[in-house]
Length: 84
Ligand SMILES: [Zn+2]
Image (cartoon, rainbow, N blue to C red; front, side):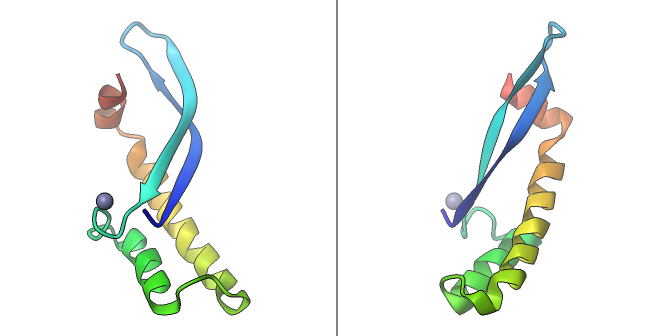
C-alpha cells in the first residue's frame, strides 16, 4: 500500500440510527490501477521516488484529487449497505 486516507464517515443504519466513525482508505498500485486519480499518484512515486521539496506542490495536488475521488465514491448507497 502506497498511502492511506482517514476521514470522518457516517451512515444511517436500517433502524434509523446515524452511526459516526472514521474510515481509512488505502492506495494500492494494483487495486487502484483503474482509478485515474489514484494511478496519477502511483505514477508520480514511480517516477520520482520519495517526495522532495521540488515536488511537494505536485504531490499535494495529486493527493487532493485522489482524495476527492475516494471520498465522493465512498458516499454511495451501495457502500452504506456494505458497512452494515
Ligand atoms: Zn491491492
